[in-house]
Image 1: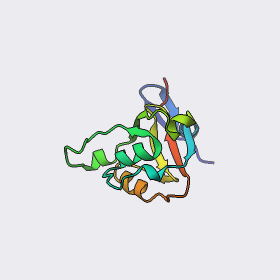
Image 2: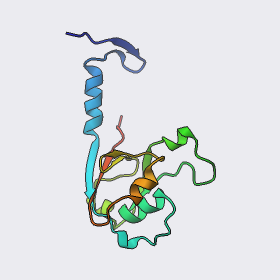
Image 3: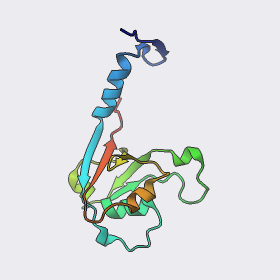
Image 4: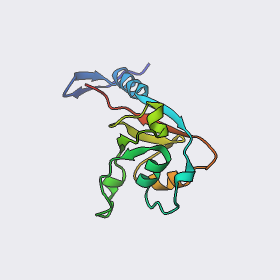
Length: 141
């Protein structure tokens, strides 16, 4: 039987990685919400140039833009999390009641999403199928 490694963690003191990290991972998994929505592709004009526009029109989710198109993306900014800035009233996301400001969009149809692949993932969605969004809620301390 393997023994857990003990490491110091400033906020909590000693941490038994074998048990404490497992419970932290399951805590994180518990904060995941899986929401199935059917996007309305009829609202698209075909001129949407970014995932931000597509996400807002298809799902009613506004994501926080770090870049605003003003500077070139670097490796760090491309891998930042997609944070929900707001939910459009009356949209499918709003009606679901499960998506809130501060939540993070982590997967679309079980594919991990980042700024790097956000636009291409949204453009590749099948027009006739529902979409599974995996949202992670922030931990309230």
